[in-house]
Amino acid sequence: MSLVAVVALGAVLIFVSRNDRAVAEAPILGDHWHAAVGIYMCGDFVPNPNDAKQDVSGIHSHGDGLMHIHPFGTRYTGEGANLAAFADTVGMEIEDDRLKLASGEELSNGDDCGGRPGQVQVKVWESNADQQGRLLEGGFADYAPQDGSMFTIAFVPEGTDIPRPPSAGNAPTDV
Image (cartoon, rainbow, N blue to C red; front, side, top):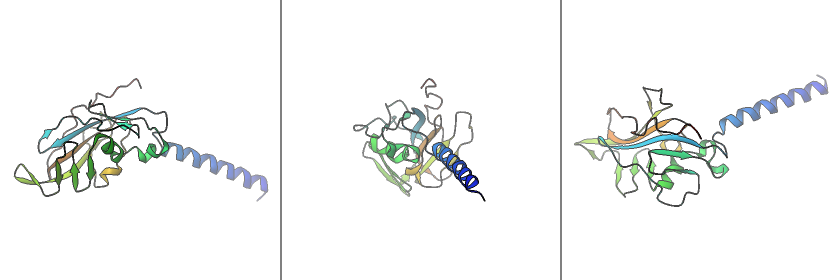
């Protein structure tokens, strides 16, 4: 193989890998995304989360039922624009088996929820057109919503139908 062919092949591979990586890293610095969010506790939505401290990540809420995603640093781009960053800003903690709300209320899998054992669950809808949604199997803190998606953090008995957040479809379309 000639040197020119090797160099050309190398250049093509670098271009392709950079394109793939750029797509995988969204949201990037300068993006301004929104995802609808609700917290559903034993059959009722609780008040929308609001920032509990200074936002250092660019992943926050204004109490409007939306997770605002406009990363302030590369640590919070791509998969770093996740539920853990959001929870930290709004004063919550979320693990696969435990949920602590900004109010201080803490619930763990097996705690009472309307006379039945409840469990932490997260249901995700990829867009307003997604009528079915899907339950995350775990890794709740690592969930990184996409622009226009929606999710409900729930503490409910297994098998409970988890509704979309009340703010579904309220994300601005002009940013």
